[in-house]
Length: 340
Image 1 (cartoon, rainbow, N blue to C red):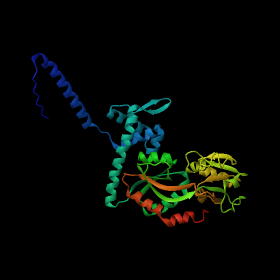
Image 2: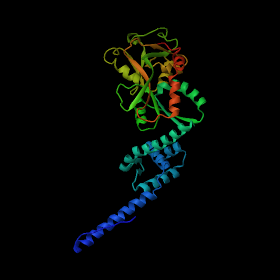
Image 3: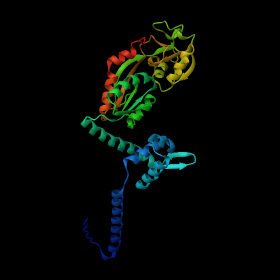
Image 4: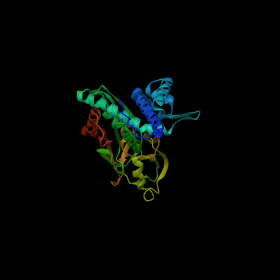
């Protein structure tokens, strides 16, 4: 690099200007050499994100299949490269510093971009591999199982990671690119950055054990439930939002005994008692001895969707997985024995 410097200043000021020039030159060279010599790696960013999400080095190490010592060493190296402390470490635990908070979304974007680059190249070659990350609400376990089994058989080179959360949690994971697709009921709030494909529609049902006094009914009204204990869907569930529309009007005479957001726990109670669960009908698909009777009120529809980022790249594995979910024959099998 050649620097031509012309200084048109008086002799009295030349020393000051020369000193400022040397300081700037040293700073420029320091920054340039630091960038050139930086050995920050995608792997280190993945380690950082894992610790940032768990706030626990041991748990992050288990997730990444590396020792805690290796993880700590790589985080320290990353902090040295960036010239900033990323975590506050104390006897009370681990927390992100201001620099760590700033880096987290940037690191996620870099990781997602690097993975997208690989997937685009794999897709161009027709080599279906890599990881398919699926997020789902707990209620869709049965439907998810029916879609994943044939997908795995047809695409043995793809590994699958499934995470369960609430609909709101899944949308956050989608936006931060922790998952590729989210299976959840459609939100009542419009999300401009999310594309939602409708898979099927259903409504609130009353779930009960086979042989329950109400199990022979073709449909039920809330007035018929008054003499039985009710399991109420927990906060964060779409069934709860639909349920809450009745509050103060139709549900005043209901005997709510239990509230839970765990469908498996609710089904355990239903199977072993005369309790009635107000829910989507899907949990009944996974349980023998549990029947679902439609609640006679068509106002409370529940729309099952596959959600993706609107302008994000859709991996080939996502496209093929969604084909299984769109399979009308599969959905017909899922609902064949389910009362409407």
